Length: 303
Image (cartoon, rainbow, N blue to C red; front, top):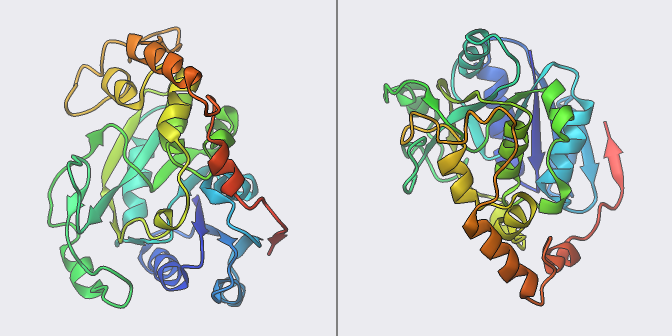
């Protein structure tokens, strides 16, 4: 049914729990593909022992390159991107399958409903603490209580897991490499789908996942994703979500969401930000320091 792509950076304990939960709690049989950034913690030996399809780079190449590489090898029509620090709940795939069947187009983006110990101001996440790491994870209680929150599907976007049709992933070019190693690449992907005509963005309530939270991003130098987004699209990320994306706060989906021409209107704030960034000494279309910090692709391996 789905090709599930998972980038991992020396997170063996998390990766094991993630993959095992998919195999244990799926109602259908899915293809699993893993990209190993480095993989020197035993991850390489483990995926080989499990017969999992994988790619590997001897250095960390970030999520944009890793996910794009896996998506190119996917054999199913639908691609699910999830992080290695997530745990699937029973029947997670049934919710997605029902969501796909409920609309008459494959130009859509679906998102899993995340359960986290801390959710901040998020309106799409569910608060729940079932452990802060794999050693503490209370699987029995998670399985029993993961559906206690009775909320339904929500219009709008969330973070991973993200489910899209491979045709449209290829059509928009997947993750844009100028956002490497990955900050703000999700909003850029949302925008590219919007420009392609997508108006179906849904957080699927039945597709629930536990998220330990940001176990890799804290180890890398972040690119200036917000700056790159403005320079590329002419509006800020906040304006994009407020004016273009459907949400519970704006059931009318914003004044621009039904724009038949599918073009993005530059905002006054966006123009001002562009001028300001252009006058700085930093490279305006990206973050050279972040690129310099990237060690390069190195050698790719597949199995």
